[in-house]
Image 1 (cartoon, helix red, strand yellow):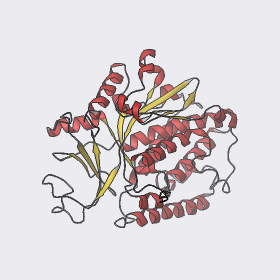
Image 2 (tube, helix red, strand yellow):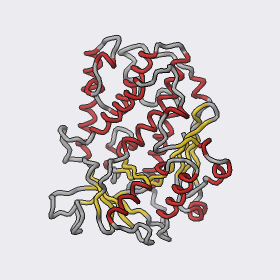
Image 3 (cartoon, one colour):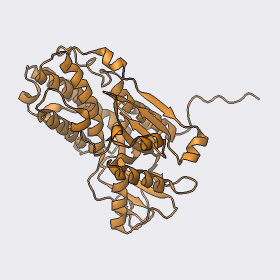
Length: 380
């Protein structure tokens, strides 16, 4: 009997999710055109000249452990190494998790209890679910070591992609990164401590989050709602600033005017986030050289396409929800950062925030050699 041929996985597995998200982050740094710009915008204005050779010396490398190495090392999956220039690099540590769709539950303390709201659709994830139920403790050890060496403990985090089915994944027309919830080790532990819950009890625990409103999220086995500010905006902002700072420097080396460079970067970012930037900052701030109507029409249509795509995946979505408001806030934060930069050139190592990532050069050399640790390492 012939062996059955399989051309795709049965379900949306963790490996597929991780590969796509790591690849998306890496792609942000490989070349100047990976936001999909200027291909979709260059017909509106002239794109600044840049030094492509600078990106040829900056290719991203992705490393993976064998299953045996992963089991012995505590479960890290991938390492992505991205040079930032001047022999520097920056890192985040991520543990990826796959979610399952849930229509709701009957847990008394859960915000997703069907008696409180019907329907109550959400994504549910397991964590600390390795064979020894010690994954969270291993991540805690890494976070503590980084903190002891002057690095933000927030550099260690979980990633929970909110796309849970192959059908939704196939329909999604933008980066999975933009549909991923991040939780840092300090954030989870602080919330658990305040709720009187022990996450170091050698048990599997769960994270739940609403598809449409990320403020509705909780951790259980004994459910407790997360009350601190969502860090997703900070993580995404830091990744984007790291990319844009390098790209901005390349523009300026070609003697492009600073105001035009920052406008190019912000329009590039708005295109990537699929927002209308003219709703976040004034026309005069963004478009010093005019063409308001052309840009307005382009971004209005882009935003409409984004919403149509999302409503095709989540039927409960409506255009008046606050699902995408966080993207506008990320855009404003980046715009404010660029506007506040008095010098033509921004020093990435000292000026770009390091709340959720860190400069690898800040670690003692021995610790750098030991960071084959228990998680995914993204170095950019």
